[in-house]
Image 1 (cartoon, protein in one colour):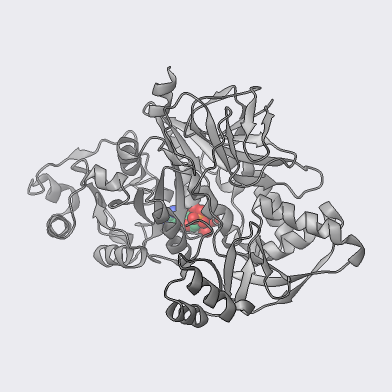
Image 2: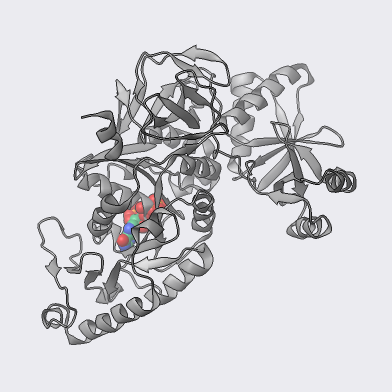
Amino acid sequence: MSRIEEIKRRKTFGIVSHPDAGKTTLTEKLLLFGGAIQSAGAVKSNKIKKHATSDFMEIEKQRGISVATSVMAFEYRGKKINILDTPGHKDFAEDTYRTLTAVDSAIVVIDVAKGVETQTEKLVGVCKMRDTPMIVFINKMDREGKDGFDLLDEIEGKLGLKVCPLSWPIGMGQRFQGVYNIYKKELVLFRAHGKQEGEAAIVITDLNDPILDEKVGEAAANELREEIEMISEVYPEFDVEKYEAGELSPVFVGSAINNFGVKEMLDCFVDIAPNPLPRETEQRLIDPFEELFTGFVFKIHANIDPKHRDRIAFLRICSGTFRRNTNYYHVRQDKKMKFAAPTSFMAAKKEVVEEAFPGDIVGLYDSGNFKIGDGLSEGEKIHFKGIPAFSPEQFRYVNNADPLKSKQLAKGIEQLMDEGVAQVFTKEINNRKIIGTVGALQFEVIQYRLKHEYGASCEYEPVGLHKAAWVDCDNAEALKEFTAKRKRDLARDKDGKLVMMAESAWSLKMAQETHPDVRFHFTSEF
Ligand code: G4P
């Protein structure tokens, strides 16, 4: 197969959801369709267990296992589909955000009973920054949940997505009878734990066809007719270009655990989800079909188990062909590197790859050469954009607890920050360091790793902060006034960018109002 054909058959996406909405279950069903795994439960065992929240070593152990499932690839209808796992545990959220910078589309899973939850809102927000096309899957239709139209309102209101239902449930919970696939004009009847493949869908192009009453009963048939009519009046017709532009999200419903409604969504996904998209760099737009190889690192996994000290950098291929044992140019370090054992991820097994194409993710064994956002090329000096740092939500002062080891502490902090474990900010007035994370667990991880990997000790001190906002301003006078007035709130991030460490939502709002020329950003890239 030619390189062009290889690129055209790739679809790289992530599943985003609040923990427990059914992401793992859905992933597993998708892999089953693709024949990448043989039995249910294969993915499940890698899930980070809820009860482990206070025991980070346990979480790390499980995270270690889950490296193998960080990227799962499968073949379906001639396409190569790469699913990038977006860890659902709340404490890994920044890793999750960054993974979304490497996808071309996303599937958003929502629990029909719980509706839109906080993590979903945050993750969809990240997808929207890049206009990532999103398909919504409303899960757990076998349970009682919210009214379908109310839920669509909630999705539009809270997530700011324009929706377009492409499948619609007939009843829910105990009364759940199936879905009408608006996209294909087919009725699919629900069977708990049913094997769907063998079961033919019933084509119903005209909903007035009495076969509908025969299959689901008159009352349910009439209800469906009314609801589908309402959908056609209220919601826009599906338009693939709008979907690709991130302006319209098709909605599917089903029950992942019962493998119901999943195939309908997957078939539509395969038809409409974008192939590898161009990537922005500071220099120019990189087209996936270019002959020369380029790629960027979006995630670094360091195993903190001393018995398995491996570090894997995850590289997204953006153009050309990536080959094993070939010299590539590491732009930031200005040096050539080659990789003897790049790995691909096929469900639960890691394999050495000879070559990989745009849209693919390869794992590179790394001894400390990579930082998040690093680019590789065949010689061109390109700096990828769109892999920002996100505003942390938890902050603590970090103090050196062992004055004899201050160098080790500085080095340890610097390296852990490069890996993307957390972010460090240096206060302008007193040079004190503040570590910011998305989840509280990360503080423990840092302390542990500093001790075990760098021999350094640190202590934390509480600091009441709400958010870090990166600041910029075209008006030099206004910026000067702002920095003079807000000196005690200002800090620099690890790249020296100016950041306001806002104590509260209110103080941030006040700063915005008092300094209208200053722009405040919640990611490091703007
Ligand atoms: P997550 O990765 O998004 O965190 O969710 P996961 O797939 O682990 O699913 C969370 C829980 O929801 C699991 O139950 C799972 O079995 C259940 N679930 C997933 N899809 C459906 C569905 O369509 N209908 C119903 N009724 N439940 C569903 P659990 O009890 O937490 O775990 P387990 O004991 O089943 O493993």
